[in-house]
Image (tube, rainbow, N blue to C red; front, side, top):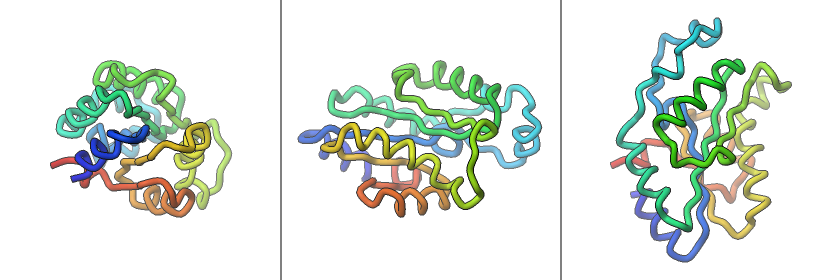
Length: 164
């Protein structure tokens, strides 16, 4: 199991764990796309936590050789604030400086570049800590593929491999 691999790796190495939010640590509800696009309130703040994932993340966060990061996208600044509030409530052990929420409406990118946005951020952390072993846990297949292409040394895995 992936969690066991991470624990084993952390015995001798510094490990960075990058987690997506929607569909990874938070339930992703289909049918909310219109609410997200129209920037309706309470879309993210009331999202259900995925407790089986959060239990594993919290346990790993206690290991001194493991650093937890959150890397997520949203469309608007208000949604960013909701995601930050959600993280503060459900994952208070993640350091604020280790949270990166990309506000898409404030960025310039092409459709082709969009799946690579998270890996660009992850690359900046990896460059600061070249000796670390890095994992990215994500649920979006195009983002998984893009991250594997952009950063072949990054261990990119679907969230389904993270839980028992």
